[in-house]
Structures are given as C-alpha cells and as structure tokens.
Length: 68
Image (cartoon, rainbow, N blue to C red):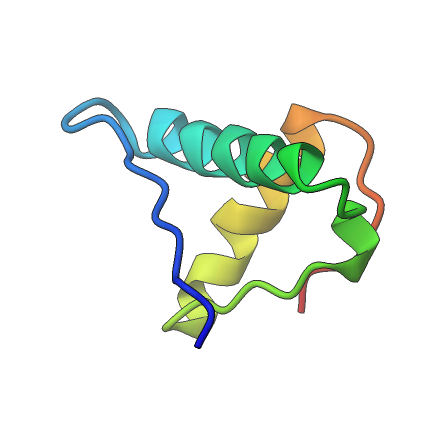
C-alpha cells in the first residue's frame, strides 16, 4: 500500500493565506515528484471550497488544469 503524504499548513492567519499555503504546498509536492499539475487530482470536501481553491491556484501561477 502506498503511504499517504501530508502537507502541514501554518496555524492561524487569514483564509487567503491558508489557501496560498495549500497551493504552494501542492505545487511543491508535485514538483518534487515530477508530476505535472494537469495530471493531479485534488479532492475537496465541500463545493463551497472550489472558489477559494481556484483563486489560490490562479494567484500561485499559471493554471495548467481546471479545478471542478
């Protein structure tokens, strides 16, 4: 069975800074494994989280895939 990696986020701070940390952490994790963002699948527990996730990934750099 493949181990599940965790990305630790800083406690506190604003919601936008948390999403920025998520986007940066995901991009770094993918880069370390030579996985293009377009090949990644991310799961969010609620549809309401799509908008802030999209915004964070767009701010983090060129969007290579579509978050749905």
